[in-house]
Image (cartoon, rainbow, N blue to C red; front, side):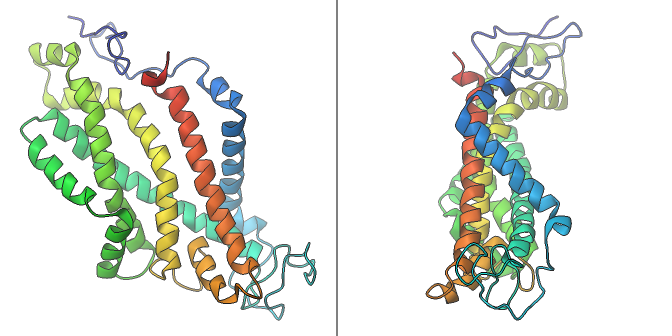
Length: 307
């Protein structure tokens, strides 16, 4: 018996294969070519890739130790008046090289964002899919999700960090927990459409177990749309994480983190604005490129937007 449905009616599903199993939706042809055809998206992806590459290669690219103090205190970038060639982007209030701290700081900021999005997306998506799969659980689960959604993400993060204490791990947990409600609601909405398809009823009719239906049919038909949402959520998580570090609840000295660097530089805004402006600009670029890349990825991969 072949469990399949009309793909014209449901772009999230694919026909059954010869073994009677529904495979995950295949990538749309030439999606990478269509993605790179968008000049803004291509520029955003290239810039984000360069930032990530610099973060990964920070131990080899950084000219100085990010925690090393020097006598060149509050030097402006080398291309400005008063700058020194040894420090391309200048130094902070303790004489530490800003370029080196940017490379290590972006490394930590991106790591926090990726881990938080991965944990929050996995837990939230599982809850949302489970709620759609078992209708009797849906009212109870979604009421709990509605309660969590009533709290602003930054407020929820502040509360969790205040309970667990300062540091990188509490911030990651707080960001992951704040991502769970949004991911759960998105995953549930996608899964509800898949659960109405005929191949789910056909699978139950032939006696497939709930585990098989959940893994092979529901999850595979929802995973692409969930990944698109997580790519858009990444920029928001980076911004919230930087905000928590700016408030002194994230990474602690002498570690380098972009939000903390901006916070330390606010004391020198009047006479050395570059100390706070440069890491703030890098946060802006990471969030902007992540959002632009996520929007472009959604446009080329989400079958509901295809005509």
